[in-house]
Image (cartoon, rainbow, N blue to C red):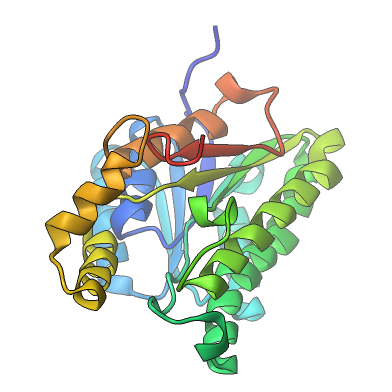
Length: 263
């Protein structure tokens, strides 16, 4: 039986140091994997890198704006220089939630570009610069982070939902184009994940409705099959599975980690 051991492998993680990004980065380190941490906010990234190094991992940090191709190209090159063919994939966490409470026609062009540049262009650029090396090595796994809004229409967050639909298509196409060279590309799609972002989003919704956070939260979990929201660790466990040899025959798939919100 294949294990979740990632020893002697390295992975690039974008958005690596907050929320589910931090949980994913540390899960990789705990499973034996080395890391390339790429993001803009350096103090939390450096702090997380020290946590991973304390576990005995080799960690490379590179300040990266995923919407800038030159930044992404250098981040991949730095990772390849440090780890060569041991750089066996990536987890693309970096993303924006976008403004909530806006109808489609209330968004402006700046909203559109802000969301699509990070949530879609940022993923495309990492794929563009990393997948060819993975294909040449004949192995590897790349995981994108989607969401339940990529499986249904969305009120008051249409542009954010559109980025997640787009990301699903990009993930599946990349899986088809790289699979014969031994590379797997999958998506993990969290539902509501407890933490700072969810607190803000449900808090804003509660304010619009004239109610409180607890009411909005309880209403949400009542609509899930398991009656609970997700945790960062739930998402990290799913990512770890898709990076590991335990999922060696899985590619082009969407793994919902949502407590049964989409059934």
